[in-house]
Length: 83
Image (cartoon, rainbow, N blue to C red):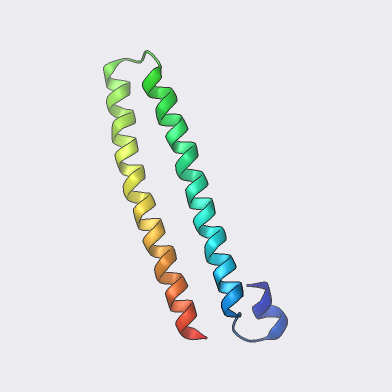
């Protein structure tokens, strides 16, 4: 993104690759942090309704992560095509 402002043109393939890799690392970190949360909740003695809520949240989170990854890949491919 910075490269676009500096050069006045489209970013290089390397810049797009770095940006995409950074996005995927952030998504992976988010996934790991959420997995820790779920693990802690599953190890805790919680009422069944809380456990059910955590399971529902986990299912929703997984769908959102799939969508985010697909979106990042499509955005990366589209930006590569614009070059």
